[in-house]
Length: 615
Ligand code: ADP
Ligand code: MG
Image (cartoon, rainbow, N blue to C red; front, side):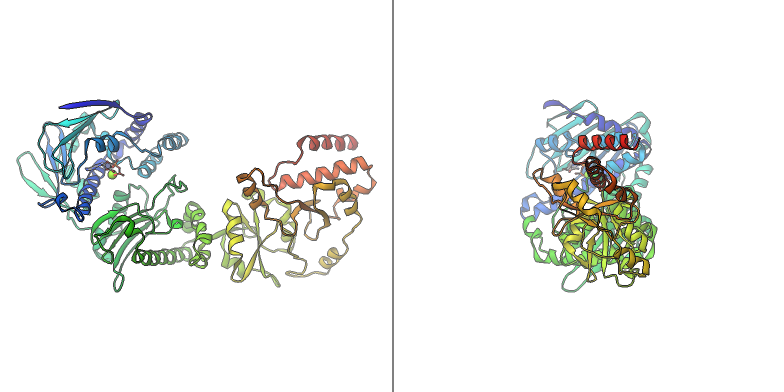
């Protein structure tokens, strides 16, 4: 035997501790994790065997659990693909490879609460390491298909692991030997193990056999893939257990879609829409979580193209007989049949979401809070489905102060209104206190408040909903004077705009603004800034600036409220103070739009100058 020892990568020990301690009461899950790995390994071997017969198992595939109650040792033996020495080091020597630091950060934020740990562990799939919840030593013996060498890996789950070649003889596959902790001896009882298999691993499509000390062998699971059964045979609880055990989740799914399609395209889907978002939803490296099977043989769980990226939070199974098993991954990925199936899955999900939206506002809004941002990507990425997606999006209504659909916005438009008014801002609070809203407030016209960075993008890409333009009210191009109930005083106010002030302000501000105009939309605030002709939505401009420091942006138009006391004071002031007051008004309008003052030092000097004058 020739062995070397290696310490764990930085942070691994820490994570293991979190896993082991936070999941203490849930340590039952270790078994489902190891069994799902065993099943994956058998599936992999079958798949590779399609193109290389010599790798196939000539006997029946199975997973054996050998229990030695006396010695408190549990062994899990599979007839899967097996691992080489290098693979052992790579797959079991590192943990949560991509997300280690993110994991720890999240944990700290959550004060190590158990629930957070559960979800996080699900997200990272630290599956194999859950063995250390019940064992203080784990030994893996593995022989890779197509080789004779048996390799060993051993660890206490704390310091590191040793790895090497073993002299033991073994059939192709992997044996995981758990030396149970003192306080985990319950898992050396066959009845306990049987109960766990029934609960979490019944769906594993290979027989799971238990072998007791007296040599008796018993198959425990029913070994039928859950999705091949008809929906009427499956209880809600079974659906949930399968979702939790297969995808390492702990929540109840928001929706479960189990359908069979027959005809030119034959496939079965069992899709889950989760309730909670994984932390890595916006990680560009993140793969979809749909397990693709071709005629019950597992192909891949990270294939692009099974589901569009704007539905990447969906987890589930797709099993089809319409694809050919003997093709490479790449060919499956680019196969037109897969594209067709993907389209039909997308339709199903959209129609399910629409149903949910109609059925239960509160539940849908909770779902929307988790995944709305991702769904909105579809509005500009998926030309074919964007209209359907637009039907299920929710946006904050200023008037109703809650999330509403675009449809209900359109239905409550006032007389003469043919635009959808929107205001983008960083936060809801900022949007609500914006001077841009004042005219709308006064006339009872609703404005949609949008706070996701991509809102400015999709609205400008989509341009319309039901033929009504999206109009960003931080731009100039609209006139609400004639909308809704037009009262005489409205018209009067709009007409009696006093033009005496604009020349003074223009003179004072010079190059800072493109123009100064008298506003028809301000009520309480003295001024606001709007984009000029051809200018961009403010929030969009801010995003572009953040991406490109050289991006200048366009000059704004300052709109003034000629009925405002401060504005009326202007003509009586000295030209110095006029300048100061105008600059302060300008900067303050910027601040209300979520910007920094353009010249902070001057701003503070101006404030002092005005303050002294008042005093
Ligand atoms: P995941 O299953 O999500 O990939 P795990 O921590 O459960 O994460 O397993 C890590 C990796 O170790 C697997 O992806 C697989 O490559 C390898 N592995 C674990 N158990 C087995 C097994 N019984 N046979 C072959 N490979 C295995
Ligand atoms: Mg696993």
